Image (cartoon, rainbow, N blue to C red):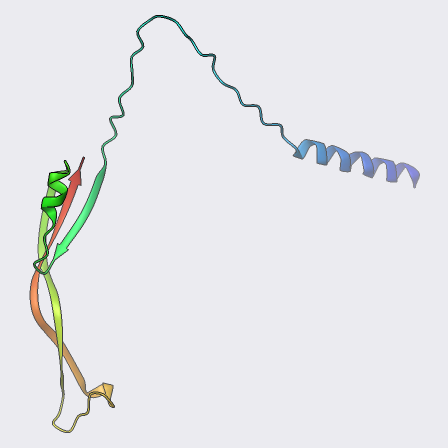
Length: 116
């Protein structure tokens, strides 16, 4: 019984010690030589997709900020909806089932893919 107790304690200590990792921050040595170093320029380009619809167009703000249009698409979009009663005796406030909704104004949605 005493051997089992000691063995279980050894296993428990081993598990605890193996679970704890030491983190060593390895840094490369700094070379302070007089040689000219080549700087790496960040060549990653940022891309965004923006949408303007129903007559709103703020693309000029992006173009003034240095963005370039890669792709431009446009499609129809419903800007506003209108509702009307299905029958003469229909009360749209009380009976939602008799309310008919249809598109009122149809506009254009422009989708731009920009890159900077």
